[in-house]
Length: 492
Ligand code: AMP
Ligand code: ZN
Image 1: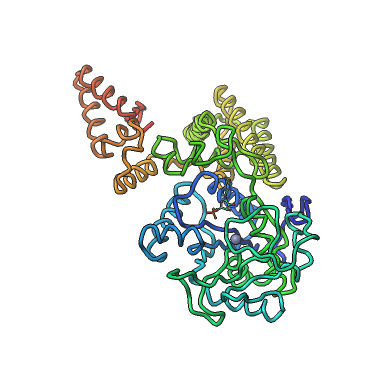
Image 2 (image 1 turned 45 degrees about the vertical axis):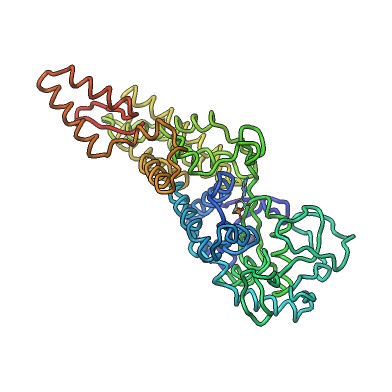
C-alpha cells in the first residue's frame, strides 16, 4: 500500500518510500536529558513510533537514528547548580527516558547517538563549513554559521528572511522565534565552563550541529525523513538544513515530519499553570501506561490533542474493551459454519485500518475501524454465529492493530509498580495517590495466598471468611473474577 504523509518542506501530502529501495532512513530529534520527560515530549516520540511501526507493517525496514542531547545550556546550568560535572548529571535522566519509552511501548530506534560522543564529527563539519566560507570565528573563539551564505534559509518554516541583517548573532539556545540570526556552531567556554579541546579551539557544540553531524554520520548526506515536535521547525531544523546542505550541496532530508504540540485541559502545558505532567506523575496518580499511550497516539499527529483526565479515563475503558474482546474471541465457542458477513466486516476493518494509517497516519480513523470490528464481532458472538475461521481472522486483525497501537498485552500493573518503586527510591512516595499505594501494598504472592485461602474457605462453606477476603482485596483495588478454570485476580 502507498503510504502518504504530509511533508512540511513541500507543504504537500507525499508518498513515502526509501530512496535506496531498501532501508527507510529516518532521523528523529531525541530528548535533552536534563529532567524527566513530560507528556508533550512523549506525544512526539509516540507519533514517530507509530510511523516506524506502520512502515514495518507495510514491509519496509527502518533505519531510525535518534540523538540524545547530553550537553546544552540547560544541562550545563542544572549540573552546575547540582555541583556535578555534566557527565554525572545526565545519565540518570537518560536512563529514565529509556525506561519511560519502555513503559509506553515505544520501540528503540536502530541507533541512539549521544552528542558528547560525537564531538569529532561536529568539529569536522564546522571545519568544512569554514572552508566553504559559511562559518566564521568571533573574537572570543566561538564559531557561527553565516545565514546570509544560505539563500534558501527559511524554506522549511516558510519564514521570509529577506531583510535579515548580515552578521547579527545569537548564541543562546533559548531563541527569539521571529528573527533570523547567525547561530552558534561552537561556543567558546565561559570561565569555569565545561568544554572540549579541539582543532577549533576550546569549547562546546552549539545546539544544532549535533543533529547535522550525527544524521550524516549514520544516514549519509541525504536521507528519507526527519522528525520532531513542531517547535523544532524553527530555528532548529532550519539551521540543521542550512548547515548540512551548505556542507554537502545535497538535499538533507527529503521529508519533514512535525508533530503538533498538545494542550492540557484546553491550555498550553506549563509548570506555572499547574498543568504540567511527566509520565511518572500520571503513573503515580494511578493512570495506566496503556491508556496514556492510547490517548497520546489516538489523535493524528497534525491535530492538536487536548489531553484531559476525562479523556484518559475514556481511553482506559477503550483499552479494556479491546482486551476483553480479544479474550472473548480467543475463548469463544465457535459455530459450525462460517459467517460470511462477519468475514466481510473483518476484511473491511483490516482494509480501513491500513488505509487510514496510509492516509497521513490517521490514527483516529484507524482505531475507529477496529472498534467497528469489535461491535460486529460481539454481535456475532452474542448470536452464536462466529465460525472458527471468523475468530482466526478477527484475531489476526487485532494482531495487526496491536503492531501499531501496542496496548493489548497487559503490563499496566507492572509499570505502576515500577513507578512506585522509583518514587520510593527518590523519596517521592508522597506524590503517589493513596489508591495506588494501597493497591500495591500486597505482593503478588500475598495476593495469591489470600485468593487461595478464599477458595479453600468457600469449599469448606465458610462464606463469611471468603467474603471478608474478597472485601479486603477490593479495598486495595484488587478485583477477583471467578471462572470455571479458577479465580483470576488483577489490580484494577
Ligand atoms: P526536548 O527534550 O525538549 O528536546 O524535546 C524532545 C521532543 O519533544 C522534541 O521533538 C520536541 O519537539 C518535543 N516536544 C517538546 N514539548 C512538546 C509538547 N508540548 N508537545 C509535543 N511535543 C513536544
Ligand atoms: Zn535535532
